Image (cartoon, rainbow, N blue to C red; front, top):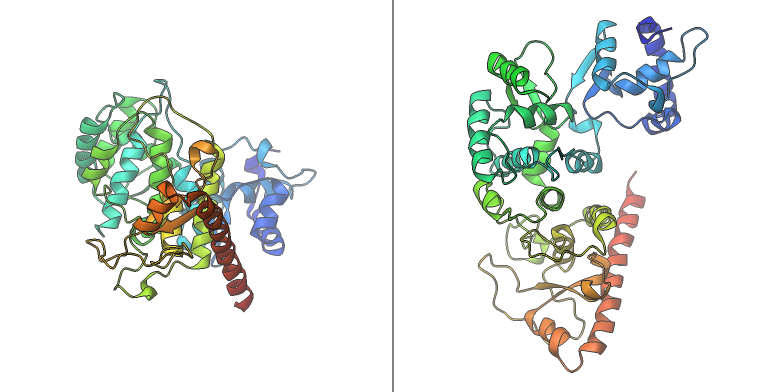
Length: 408
């Protein structure tokens, strides 16, 4: 039997099984990942289209379920089958369908075109431009003419690997990856292959488009998200290049690493990085660290070598106070943003095998930083600070556990 033999009855039985096992148990049973683009809507709930079709195949007479590794049709094929059976298909992911970490994974796992030997910059330029717009609160969706004009201009100036002025390519590709929504068009969006067909489709349809709403909201409101995405995009795509001019033009040259999440005043209450947010930041740092720890580059590069997310977590963990227990008093002066004068320090130097992780990092006032770096008692102080870093890190983990236990 073919997939086209599946009827609404088999699909509804697969949906019932998903409800019984729960989404994670259902996906684990059949070896599927969460949908990144197409969800089937049924009685107010959303389900992963490919996994539902794979399970539904097992309800056909004499057939078994199709595991993810055996599924020959893509997500769009599964969505088309379900739509033909009368199910509503949601293209683009609602905030309620994904966790924060899944959205981060979606943004930071963008596939790169490496046909020239190095990753092309089409998609990171597009995402950074859209992130800057979200940060400024500009409209999420734009007419195609406005998107085309803005991106063609950026690609012309910042396409440092010979990128052409063709915004249709990154938009079509990001759309297929679930990172761009398109509206007001006819037919299927073409794949990002071949100049003529893709260009003609966008020219003829003139779709409105932009980031999916949950991704836009994360870029708009979460400094942690912005830093994680910038870290990932620059580390993946801009090795050996200077992204500073691009970041300046899209309005991301001064991301709020040094600012607390809610800069509403100068009181300690503004440093409200929750334990859950701290843990999320550490998890993002660890994912990146697993890919890059121990790597060294021999050439000079303007790309960031250290995690902005880790620095952000430590600064906010400190609540604006020097983390050296022997501090004799940090300077009363503040920065132009009315924030404490603090510097994030790696207690164990990265060059000596230290980690770019909050468990080995502390926030120090300039005086304590100088003692730790050049003072005669620096070795003793380093031992103390390493213990402090671990204690502060464990305290945040404990706080998250306590808050989770208190939830009903």
